[in-house]
Image (cartoon, rainbow, N blue to C red; front, side, top):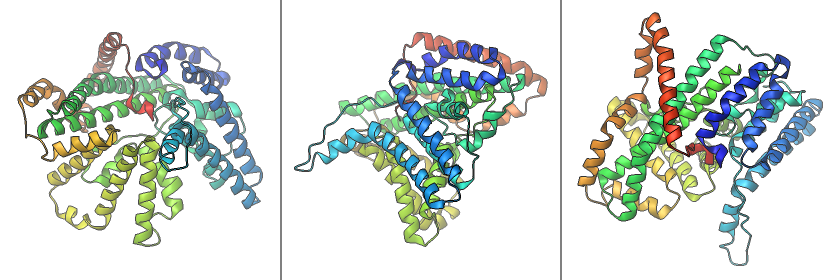
Length: 464
């Protein structure tokens, strides 16, 4: 899909910004709606129909919830209709073939697999629109009476296809009145450049190491060291790929006058699995907390119900990422660790040195990335078995990989921490003012060179 590549996004932006800022203020929501629909439908125009349908259903149901607020039963029914529609839309396009294939294993059941391409970003925008009617019912967000403004919220291309998941209540005021200023433009541009560099210079550069280690598994030459190198490489790749996109989306939102919530908080600095998930993909974590975990009862009602709620939420979290058993196992894997930390390991972790806690967290998380990355459970099992002693300790190829990627890995480790931000904050104001445009221009030039050299630069989370 051409529109799922970073190159297309990069080329689409200048014309979009030009048209947007040349438009009168009263037309800018409409312009942003149009350019977002064009961006979304460039490769697959038929899916614009799905987007329009989603906008109309949730817009009208928000109005109906508000209209019948005095009749709670009827208002709840309209909320339910909106939720059912969004889940049905997501279920049909993303999960039908998976469900059909698994049910067809039962004798007497033969469901057709349709092979329908997955609309890009459907997991993100269905969650966004679904939360709107719920928030209107809860009185957490005002009802939107302008369909163009609501459509702008649903389709906003900077974050439409890979997050962060934006809740309507956080941007409702910006849709009506937002500030366009040189300061916002400068801050947004800087954030965009940081995200672009994360994706192009860091994520793409370490991705080759993961592919090399995965190929070694296929050839039967993977070692313990090689296995862990691969898991670390994929962990860094997905972090800088996804957080890079989030930075770009937050930066573009700032340019257009919107304030999107942060999506990452240095997750690899966490000292527990629970802390990691409070720092990774925070918009998804908070969505499941607000709209599933707490309505189920959260941690109220005793240990058994809390464990049940955690299992349900993490099953859904895994399944949200993809229609495959490895994603379900990945979600349940983290549910198990979170339950263990809450009820078994809490006292032990409190007495454990910080370095050991940090190492334990990274091992758990990187093993989880192995489950996440390898759809074939047989390949995944063999790979993880090699990591835990089912293969030679190391080989000459591993030492070559270490030498080749030593500098890259060192940069990735440092960039995963807050050290760079702390050092930057200590710069004198004048030095910061001089360095910022130089570094931005340098990153744009280098990233452009990489984009020209490579014809396809997809984001990993575009497939979810």
